[in-house]
Image (cartoon, rainbow, N blue to C red; front, side, top):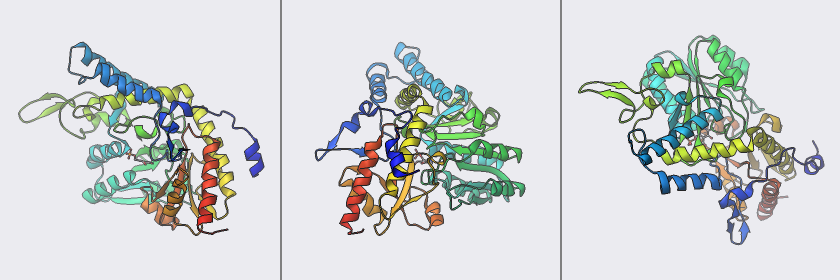
Length: 419
Ligand SMILES: Cc1ncc(COP(=O)(O)O)c(C=O)c1O
């Protein structure tokens, strides 16, 4: 597509929601904020902030145990949020476990399923594009039990090879395969349903890291049909401190608990205990009640926008950004070429300027991007770069944000006298 085609064609389903996000009204040094770091964390709409405020002002109590009105209200708000979060992702409440974040959800599987089912000589298969949170728990597990950690390669087009997946599975030693739905560096959208189905056919268990996907795409865990699907609330317009693990019931029921303590038990005797029903068996201690309520409000907001519309909006904005970045000399975008194959995560290099200097210079124009390894050091090694700059989109971004990024990059090049 030519630049003029991209700039003249209006996005098919533009969202106009910036006004719902209080922080985006902020000005720094008299100029507007250009927030392009949603892959790190999203901004929060007024409704999420209000839901948390309302919870603490009017309903705060510990849940599940109290008979008084406040405790019942708090329990209903938390469990109601769980039911809506589950439905939003095509799941059901009792197999939707609240964790602290995606990292904890993945660790839960590594400890509670992995320790019991993975042993010496087995293989855990992941990919070169994983976030550290989907690498390190498996490294720790493999070291502990004597299993081997193997990686699917990332091709030069930023994609994985299903052929390589098949040949790894054909080796017969893979017990678990874990992969991102959308890469937080490359933006690549992986064919997770197809991958999960091949993993299953080989008798192994699959885990999808959906941290970047749930905020960007319609996600139906029933259709994807992986054994585990993990994501994190703060990237999906929700508060920090809450993540989600959707699990296959048969596996969850047979798994040992992850953490022990209050709430996850049915009975406790001097020597032994018995476990609570799902999902509470995996939720030891006082839950993150306000965070659950906030996440419920976040997915209500996203559901009202319609995830098809969010995807369409961000895809068109990504398309526009790819074209506009192509106009800045010396910019190399990393990852899939087309907007259809990627989410709204755009890593790039500017020839002659270190990514940290890029981020620093464009921050002078209030343009917020991230520079570094993005918690994906093995992928940086695969790409042969120490770091990248990364602009990432949220549903509240529009073309003016991309234009501001491009203008700031042109200025940065002037500072370095490139061009
Ligand atoms: C793909 C991916 N997985 C996992 C995570 C970890 O999320 P959290 O730190 O909320 O657990 C991130 C966060 O950047 C991510 O981008």
